[in-house]
Length: 470
Image 1: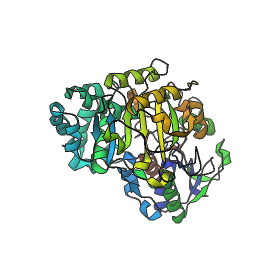
Image 2: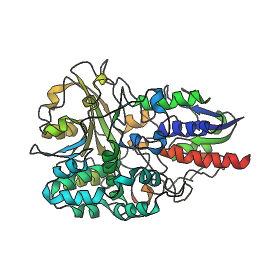
Image 3: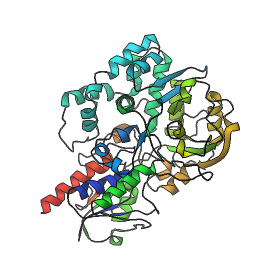
Image 4: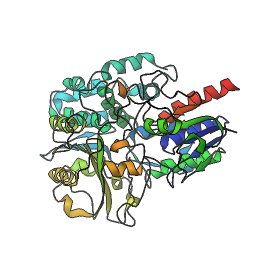
């Protein structure tokens, strides 16, 4: 009998399997798709030689993840590559605010009236960032905080809505860039703890940047899988699990799946009936014949570019998708241009590029034209650079990754208490009604992103149970 079986080979499932195997437990991993990866895959979606990341491409939480940093992933081929700027937020007049590795450079891009306010916001946390990240990403308490005072200070700043935190700023560049940071988890700006989301992304940039993985996000997943095999674990792809009886006998079962799928497979009935899925993404991957023709020079050297004219436009786009049930006319866009840091992603002189906007869960329309109108506002002539497109609305995203229910790439709405206490209101979020069954997907804390911490935290709960059994 195996000690543990893990279902789902996304970053969290892979990390959970690795953490258990590192502690001497026998582990087998089962994945329904033909390759590991989940939200960290790389494929030729458009034209031969153009390597796209179907979901996540830039990884601020990956390079800063306490789980990943404790593993020898570089020995298995993972190499982080950095653009000159982690992120830029251009404006219609050709100027831009930036998120730089340097706090001073970032603050200066906001203008003199907000530079000091930004420095006062982030500088107290940076010297303690590694400990803060570990404490924050271990909530609810899977380990005692190493620095409870800093964690409490962070909570005071981050638990209120981001709109409260934005009151520290007087001018639009700082407000707009920060609103864009919050929008990465598709949460309305006035939600609980949204200030913490923006702060985490900003601090991550200053600490270690927002890199891409050389060759594509698949490199993260492949490194985790290779390490797991070296530890004695087994990986089985093309293996769809429809019920627990489809799996070999084990002392524990760990699911990197949506709560909906887990309830169906394990027969939990309505246990997760109150779990809510949030707004969806509408994503377009592009093969381009050259760089994106951004008007703002800063955007040309940034790995990630946020698109929204001002904080009001961003807020309206989020409300439309999350609360009003309609697609925004001017969507807020997150775009990534991996070739700025990694020219191996496309043939010489060409570029891969992706952009996504937010739409209602399960939306069936086509946002492509609205996305490209937005891009043309900040990069005139963009459409002339397009060689090919791969379009993925909510249905296509859910078909590629079953965890993205209705196209929700966060595997659950990151709003209200569900941002902090997911998938249920419980201090033991990785446990389920069955004592031998656990959940470790992005539906559990600390939530969405390629960081493996949900898998790391769930693995702690599993190995404690296994040790109790002797």
